[in-house]
Image (cartoon, rainbow, N blue to C red):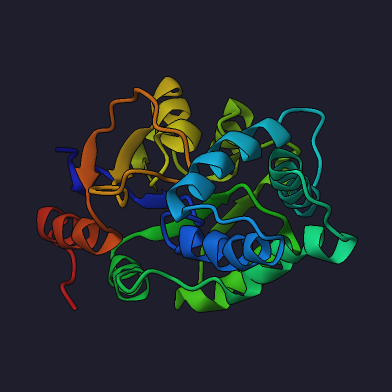
Length: 237
């Protein structure tokens, strides 16, 4: 277990870690597929998403809105139906309705009493602006894919985060649900990591499952807050 007293900053992946993006993804794609007369199980939708999204995020960089529109078109190509421009762009628009996990806001508020908080996210600035008020805390730093011009798991995203922090990387703990996007590249750079394993018991997920060894595994951000505040001697309320 990491020594929580050594950290001054916690950085978080947002979508999948703090925001329930799988419910958001399914909430848009499931009815679209049904409208197109496609009966696709939720697990299959998520598995396909985990295949399509990283492929669309390959260089050259495009904004996340464009990536998501291409993902919708990938579903259309896979199941042989047509989509309108509005249907293709609707997945990005639906982000305004994606909600935090129940543990997210109280956990962030507790952690804010002890640490400075950052977000490192594969998102556009304007799309994250829809989400930020839902997190319930004032973030100390936000680094988006749009700002960097690339997507995680590219190491450059983490390097920019480190460049913008006022502390050395030994004072940073990165927290994420995705081993593929976050834990693996952060570990390569010597950044301590926590895997928020929200996929336990689920046969499918919207992120690839790869081999990576986090410093700590927890089921929720709430569980992380419990550990971090006890081990660091921080506030409990």
